[in-house]
Length: 565
Image (cartoon, rainbow, N blue to C red):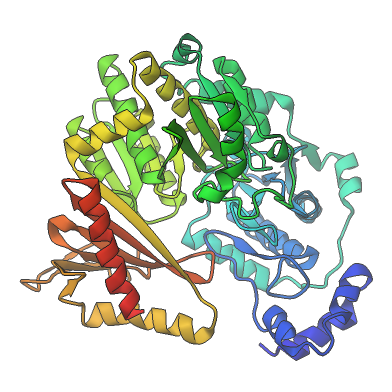
């Protein structure tokens, strides 16, 4: 793509603030290349990139082009000519939502738009509840403030998978980037082609997730006290509502209570990161809660900590997934409500400890590729087979959880409800979440996970990391960190090769550019390029009979991988 030629085309076709931003780039060849040398690609995770002018950025023109492509796809698909749209707290999220609504409505698509910011899972719920043909959410999840994004959903409420996403991408290619708006948002709203989602849909969502509670009365009985932070995002209203209905006493850091795209006190608003909890921890030291929770800006992820000594014990996404799984299965089993053929679903990079926990209850674990759309796909399979109630829990190591079939995306609101009642239930038994987690480790083994992100700062670095993946496929190492490599799974080719015999078996999963080195009963290493960001991820799992030894094993694995990189 000729960056300078495209830049000149934008100069000739834009006006107002966009033209001013373009003129400010004059002479800055590196920035022009970054903004106009490529296009922001649309895939199964939609588009996520930095905001600004340019084909590789998110702006009114690229957003409108995406919405028009979605409209073309929808009108040719045979699905209901309707779309639900939600958005989070980020800069331009509301504006981009209105741009999308106008573009879709002008093509004859009836649009249901949230009148205020809402969690991503609430959009997934609305697609199913309102029976729309597609859905859109404007969010960049947990990325920093410069980013925004568009995610598209199918009629089942799940993120679009490869085939429909490719069809939307192809339709976008037929749309003229500079074709002006056909009709204004205000005009289409007045005509009724755009309508705001009614308060009854909010209430239906609350009522439905409340059905997933197991022991909600425990919260009041235990006098549970919570510090909760929405990290300036969309979780503030719904999580507060759920905690209020449970009867929990909860406190929110004043600096992170109100929606803000600046994320002033949490510049990296990802609850997986310890720094995102700084304000919540400061408040917790004052109010002495039982539980500290934080959700990301679009409230589909949640992380949790509890007071421990003079500080706090923060649970990883893997640990919280196992705690929830054990709690739900134990409670259902005691109540005689465990389905005849229960199914739990986890992503392939999530901890194998979950398999051990599920096995103890006779529960089948379905392992899928990374991305909650694949977990949603399993729920859809169960639904189509006539027994969606068999689904007991889905989770990803990146702090995403879902109980129930009302949505097809991870939901921090239902997770907050379950975590609160779980903590309260154990509090009534004289236990903390830390006590229960330690008991799971003692019973099943210390499955300790580690994650290393390598962000690409140059094309050469990216090429080197991709070459490492190919090298592991062609000539896998004999050992890593002193641990023998017993098998290599090449998910791009779809085969698992035994290192000793050379025998192969299928992965039985869709193709993905990912490699897994199995280290026997010692653990594993997974190499996976990110689907939304310029980086590669190394996932480590070490298994031992003590936490100290498992952590030492992780350090050896990381040292071996770092040497190769």
